[in-house]
Length: 377
Image 1: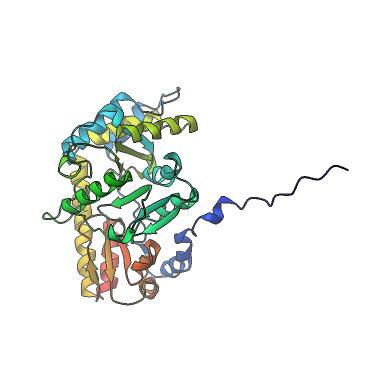
Image 2: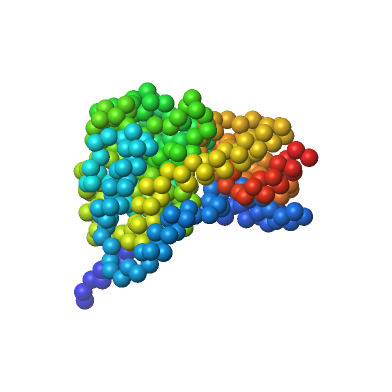
């Protein structure tokens, strides 16, 4: 009688590797906030609520007749618009057409980056102690190890495959100085670690003396993009979150590797969105206008929070106020929900945030005014 092949246990679902989706924990607090007589003021997420710029809308409409498949590398015009914007706005030099790649939203790129760059079990990915949760999600997805660390010494003798930095930071709004960025670039190059800089909030700065600088700026990288890539998004700066317009730029070898993998997976930014992105990148006026709207909302919320007993830490940039009154973050979430205000608990972003909440100012002027009244009553 032939031997039966040993039975393998079924593989565990990939979802078990991933952390719980944080915002599911806010459901009951959102329900509490909605019970307020004047309605909820939702300051928990950074979702744009202002109109998409007309130049982008017009470009999308004009491109509506688009029957063919796009190419993964993107249109030449799209990539040139990215290069022109990075040169004009961020002072980045030395970028060529093979050093930029349009992608379908920055979150998709961030979550899939470890997989596309060959990270796997036994590899290490380092991210900030207070960080966008998707860095950890992408690491868990490929079965690699993650480490939350803010200093290079905290990494010890380990050699990470990828090191994430995020300036301006989500959630804290902290801006990393040029000297620190240079030190990180040198450290990664000495070890062969890929440095990935999440710069999605780089135009959302509120401190004239502490302006964010791209890791691709020559003052940081020495004019060479070797071993470095930067992630950018148009969701916040151009109210294009629904269009899923983002891009990655930097080391041509790393961009080439991403391109090779993404071609096989069919990850292509749709042609109409590419034309909308060109229009948005070419137009600086709408960014100035949007910045002014956010600045006004930020100033009102910051003043109201401070008057009601909060301390605002960091928050030099981004679309959030990193607020604390020295208590457990969930206690703060609960008390604000009683006022009809929903915020994000700091521990969504790491254990170091357990006494802070993240307060977004991506709400309408009317809802911001409602929050101010409730906080200062």
